[in-house]
Length: 199
Image 1 (cartoon, helix red, strand yellow):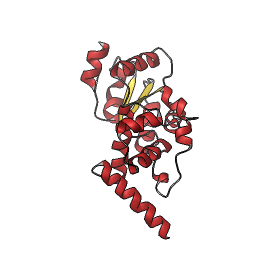
Image 2 (spheres, helix red, strand yellow; image 1 turned 180 degrees about the vertical axis):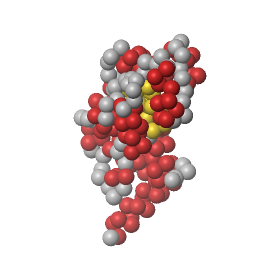
Image 3 (tube, helix red, strand yellow; image 1 turned 45 degrees about the horizontal axis):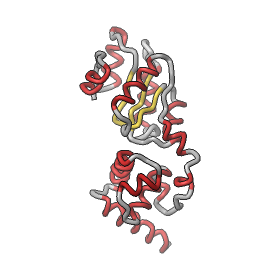
Image 4 (tube, helix red, strand yellow; image 1 turned 30 degrees about the horizontal axis):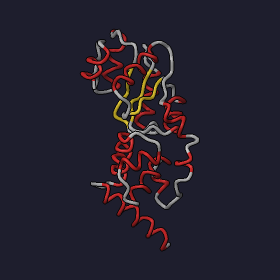
């Protein structure tokens, strides 16, 4: 990530392995923005803790979160915690760099897709099932499409998403279900639904 950002923006990029490492060097580092990465969603407890620690640093910088999810709730949660930017991992590197430039200039960046999702009829009509509480509304809609055997391109078209976004959602769904592939996802959620119907 650091190498890609250096190449794309032409600025120095300092990669650190932990918040502690950053807090030890932040006072003597000419940084303008902090990028927190490696999170599935903004509701991650570890992320909340890290944002709070950054807020207490002697040198406080605008913080941008790089995360897999792009649900409106995740983005709003991050903004409420004090971050100035939220970049989903499915955005291009060029857009991510421009988002960080905007934050550096004093602006706030959120993905347009999360605003469209708030009144997206495809999300609104996704069925409520026994397993849907495990996922965000968008992930639940993707799971239902997987159960129906739909291809990524079809899912992207029906949910008005980029195909790369669908792949991110499927990766996160597989992680939550500990599934190895999309067929296992369909099998597991069908089994969950059947077990629920028996109770």
